[in-house]
Image 1 (cartoon, rainbow, N blue to C red):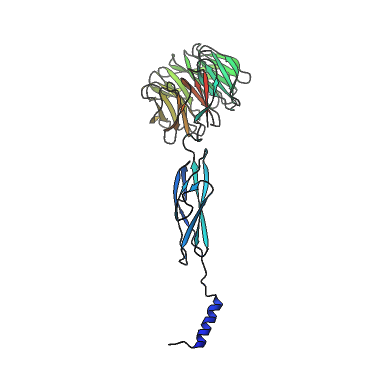
Image 2: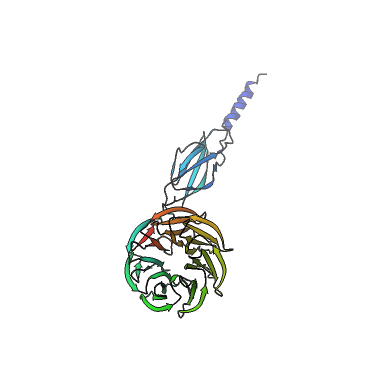
Length: 416
């Protein structure tokens, strides 16, 4: 049936009035997969996007980022290469979906980029070397981060290093064969074990004067302060016991029998327990500080030496310097050894960074330091240092680690 000419004219007029053009709707908000992720510095991430157009128009995709580079910046799937970073940074990845008539919709995702091992996540290379006395063996970094004190076992003195320029500004005479060293938490006094004199020198840090020499047991080796600063614990290597010094008057108030050949000593952050390595009996003694009673004896590897607690107090790391050359990880809740980590030859001392993420172990005959990531107890790096490295400490911020090299008469400063 043929429409009358008048009807056709009316329909044409109505079409003209309506513009005879369909409205153009933008595509749906494009999804990004993955929407959030982490990638290592310089690594790649495969990204994809999808959107639909309600009008059925073809859709194209355009990608942008606040850093890094794409293999191509268009298409529903791209590969993004992360930039090189020395600290964890977050980057925004954006995609815009556009139909063939110009309507568009956008979305974005966040990607955290973390440094590769050795590129700045932790101190990983020697940045300077400081000459000190003969046979340096122990080191303590002051709580204010301004100074480090080094025991020189062969010259019977201490070297005081000013951190700002890593210069030795004072030399303090102490007893025979100074070995272990620890600062009180307030930084006002430093305690030094004199292994050949059977006493502990107390140094006032304001003027680096020796203000006391405290008699202890035979062969004092390691020393540690409780977090409240009220007591200092000293291991007596040939006495097979621990002397407890009250710091208010520097009097020995208790003597605690432990295993054979005690060397290292460390307090938990809450001050409730002290862990002592017994080098001659392959055990760690756990002392309850409330009554100075041994509450546990933990078997570890051969000849345990250094010991350190994580900042949260949940785990203690112990070096075993003979046999398998490893670090034993003790869970403090039940004093069970939950991991054994191979490190370098003859591991000696151990220190944990303030954030609890990394542990540094000196390898005495390996001329190196092993860096352990505590989240999975994997050795991430081995840092070459001087000959016969022994003592190790870190600055309060964790940005630098100080390592004494007994054979070289030096201190290696490990930084970024």
